[in-house]
Image (cartoon, rainbow, N blue to C red):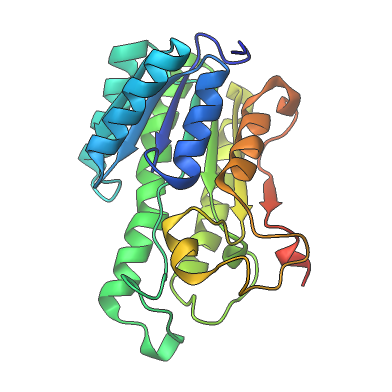
Length: 253
């Protein structure tokens, strides 16, 4: 086990599966304490937290948090501080999007109002609530690192992503606003834009290695976790307000 993040605490929303889970494992391997937040699979979050405690000797808790509810987010941040003292890293990763099942792929003129609201409430408003309350704590501490998960769909228009793309584009500007407003305090805020990432709920329902044409390859949750760890580390001490594409080259097509 490494010690790159020993005695540091990370909040991960969407922390019980996919990219969030892979990032939790990677951070635990480097000694970080973890707050794994999820709105629906709290048993999995608590089980993962216990496994990481036992395997790596870190502190870890699973908490229920629907990021659409500001009171849930405020409580999540409060639990993190109560349990571990500070919040050094916040990975705002929870999101929803069209997967062809729970949310259909649809052109703009066919997007249902409920689907539009659901996607924006989670992917944009929910991240706003998270950043708002994370910043309040990090400003007290005079430092911290915030990372948000956007998407290649937030950088370029894609058919069928009429709500998801605008939500992720707004998320990019939201994170940049947080960066410019807090740079003098020592809080760094950056965005990761994954492309299709196998092993996540959304991509797994839509893609397989055989049905896509990627310049490199489809992503894995561990690919994104590696970028998160870099952005949280001292190696990225001079990086804030940036958008990092981790999409297998999709953005260059």
